[in-house]
Amino acid sequence: MRDTIEQLICDWTKIGAAFGADPSPTSPDLERLLISTVQCAPKMARLFVIATTWLHVYGDVVAKHRLRKLIREELSGDEQSIMGLMLDLAHDRAHPQRFASIIRDLKPSPLPRPLFEVDRTSQHMIERSRTRACAVSRRWGCWCEPFEMKLDALRPAVWVMSNNAFMIVRADFRGDLRASILAALTHNEHAVASELELARQSGGSRAQIRNALDNLEMTGKARRLRSTDDRRVRILLGSS
Image (tube, rainbow, N blue to C red; front, top):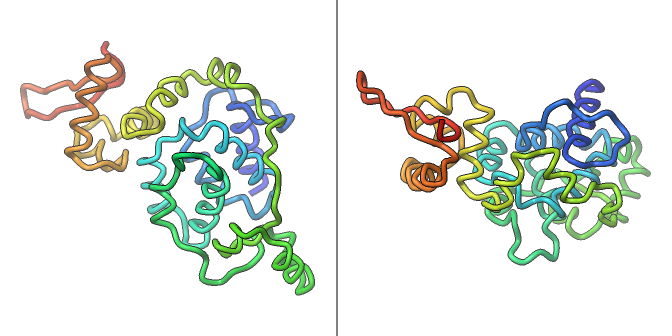
């Protein structure tokens, strides 16, 4: 777990979080980074706070269809509650609320308790956490105290975008299905096999995928490669 957290910190550093660590050499798979962050959050409060702050500022680059799919497939019930809390805190006071389509599928923990393991070490700490918990964390059953967004712990947008080029297009798309398609084609090796497989990997329906691909082909960000032998359609990034 320690190695996992250290890798997460390097990945977050790469996309603009000021952890004081060496950044990962390449940009991370953002949606899987969020999944892993939620799984490790109870062990490190600062990781949760910085990740939430980053989402508050740069949440438009998250591929929401793909993230929703990964949440459903890879997070336990308690972990989904933590994800709900993080997304809820991240889009606080934002209009429209960026993550509403994801949050509506998530449920509070059926067994409320402190979010962070350090607050679960004794009955006294548990009770202290419960009484100090913010209203949003009470709603999700993952108690944590109110905190201010750590905006001074993030790099400015110009740095984040120049060091993570994939985010520029995502920001333009504001995380819609086209962002999930590009993410799936980049990070899921089987996504290129067919429109059906791409739909499975990106979290959209077959019809939605076809419509989004029409736009991505028009702008040269993806293309369909049709086989004359078996009529299968493979999908490639870019126009080359």
